[in-house]
Image (cartoon, rainbow, N blue to C red; front, top):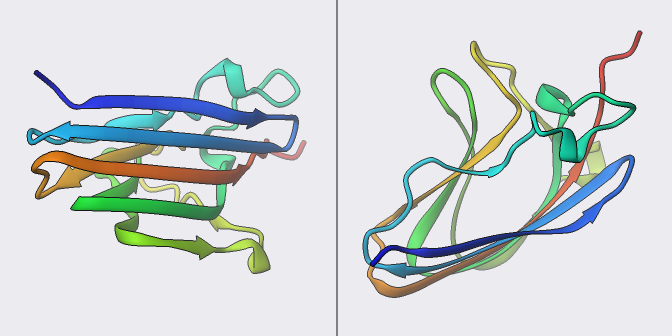
Length: 135
């Protein structure tokens, strides 16, 4: 058996993207699972994928029985947040956490769980802003 993970797009407009991720673990956990594919044309703005221009404005989370680690996808993934318990991280005051654009950055967001036991759960809502390069 494997973890049961669901990624649901709540809102996908020209500027805003909201994604809900849920996971019920069987104890094996997740390793660098891509939960937001910033290269996907599904999230395009003006015909371009948001890529490294995606910013995280807010994270609402409920994590029980494990720790959830969010990372920006790159050749060497870059930490975005480590979550345990429940709460929210609000970055709206300064328009969000931008992708650090490390070498090999795609703009995508990865989820890794640590210390998972059978029945551990994760619910994460990611509120993001899309952007595209200015001409």
